[in-house]
Image (cartoon, rainbow, N blue to C red; front, side, top):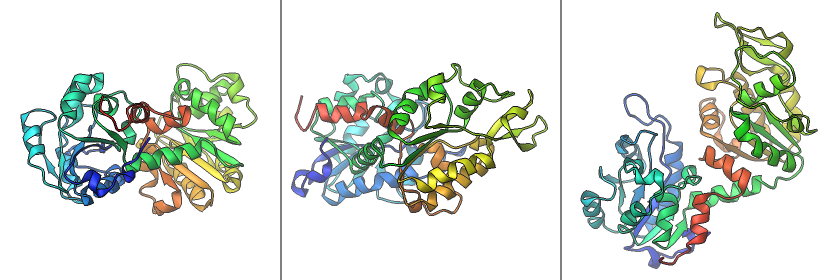
Length: 382
């Protein structure tokens, strides 16, 4: 996978560069961007191309609604870098706007998912968009696990390179797949059945693996504890996973009663009308030594239901990780949302991955469709 940092100014000046960025940022009800983390992570590649005189055409998706517009993204992006925006993807308006670009200028096109051919991975859309550019650059790590037209299609038609962020993500996550020992991995979230392949890989490569969130509920249930009204996966975790000597799960939990009050309980004390919403202090005490001793730390997924305000133990965990001098990789939008407002300088948290599902899939497989597309169609026209 070649990166744009191998290209000289001569290679880029005046060239129309199709830059697939990962600007899928959260919006509030008014349509304003509430977290610009992914925008900020995408800026170095934009600045690199702009400073070398490329005519930069930015492609990105926003949200899950095909009718959603990139207009709020354009407004947020303008706070960091001069950019124009057109409400078109590959039609006449987009073609005219691209033709009008001067060296060093940036243009954001409309949400790639406004065209149904994007999610379908249709090469006809890839070809239509490829006609707007001379070079393709994939910097959209958060979408690199998708087989969409702008991720795996366009590289079939244009010389293709990785952006600076995509390259950094691949380097950091590759390192996280082969951690120094002792190592400690923390995995939250839900759906044990989808996380099981990754958990097995982590158990084979990390000294200890701790699961929390709804994954922890699954383990408690499998170990015969009552879990009340807690969120559970459809399929119970396999015995060989939860009995692995390196496997750890919560030993106490925060439960919410029907009246809304939250209290700490041992797993055997949970009543039928209570639900687990976070881990507890004994669990933090259990994992603290593993965190402080680790030379490599991986964290993906909060410890509790953070969107309902149950963030106390995620914050406590973040404070422990911030103290560690280990090689640290944190991933998942939920994880970053939890730690973004607690006053810990983010540089103390290690490498913060811009990907959610993409981070987990890369850790499990060591590659992604978007990365494979760059390797399969390097720098030559199809």
